[in-house]
View 1 (cartoon, each protein chain N blue to C red):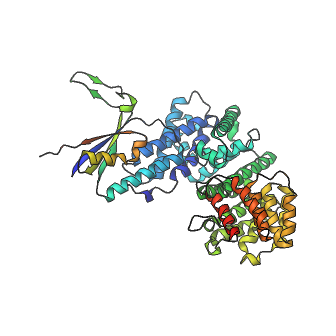
View 2 (spheres, helix red, strand yellow):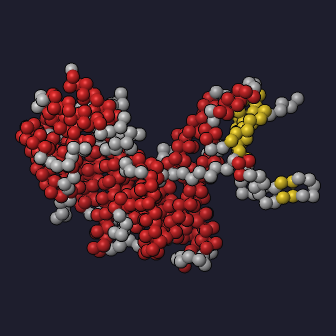
View 3 (cartoon, rainbow over the protein chains, first blue to last red):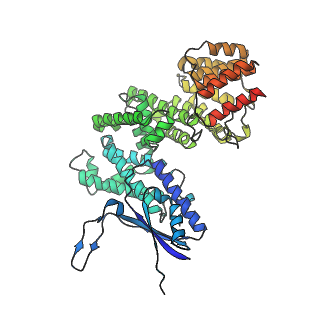
Length: 112
Length: 413
């Protein structure tokens, strides 16, 4: 068993009603609870989107964010437990976030 | 950690209406778009953050963020829009904003929005669409489904309502007084009535009863009842009739997901608390000189809800009430329901004759269903079957169609 990070990519431009947003949250919470029940959920956090800094080297600091195309902006991450990258990808496929964002799945390197 | 019970059902939908109303109170109805954007941005932020960590008090979080965004907007725009002097000063802006969002003010704000929506220059369908969107937090798609029309029509209606607000400027959220208040109140009650009946007797299949919208309608009407100026006898009558209907919401669908007619329902599943509320409101509604259509409907509903059983219903009195109601409200459903009661008082034949005397109802779903029922009682199976087949053809797949098809099966037995 290893840890995998699901990087949440993209900006959600869709404006929806409070009712639909509520449903979105409920669906996600259900998924998360399932992950927790299976012992797969390690945590997650959103990232601030308004500003950031990009350091290309010691001298150059770009202060105007976001730095990439909208679809590449990372909005946050979730960490799950899976046997291998294929299983992690299959789990990511079930994540409701996929309806509005792209998910990049990467394995966390084990430190020894 | 996040658990779905911690976020109340429909928190977003419930609070968004209150939040928009409170921002509009501060900025004016002409800036409705701004108010909606502020609330929308806040909800989106909530969805994105709460996935990871639920705040201790989700509702307070929403209010705090909306208030801050409102204050930011006011600070940036103060030279460009007309605002109360209290909002222009840094000394008082926080208090003023807090006040608008306080529990006591919120109901007032919602009332103002309802009255603003029911301006006489805004068409009735537009009024209902506007309330469903702004006070009930539904999307255009959801509204179009409930009102059985298309999204483009709803969008147009909403657009016209907003244009009107822009035109009216500050005046839009002034609560009228005197005769204008009385007129406007009628329009508000009508909207609430429509929202309730569309949700309760919904023909769209999602949920045959949208209980949450029924509660919204009752809540908005209860808000009206809190203020002397708007707690007219008709307000209480409308509350009574909604409570009586709502009391049967749980009994209307059986465990197999099928719709049960009034006679088929298990009375044990009727919500006695709501029936009691209905009776109390009915008492409070009597006293004016006016006997509105709502009074009559409430009294009819009371006949059903308060009688010990079907056999105990005072059909004679109910028929009289329907006859009176028909004078005030000549809609097809009133007439069709009256036919049913007529069949109990004078028999099936007169009821059938009455229905056949009505014009232009061949494509009315309920008309066909009722004729099917009455002919079945008259033991004219072939004719009954014909009407049920016609009814089934008038509606798409779903619970209502299934119920009709079950009736056809029963006929064949």
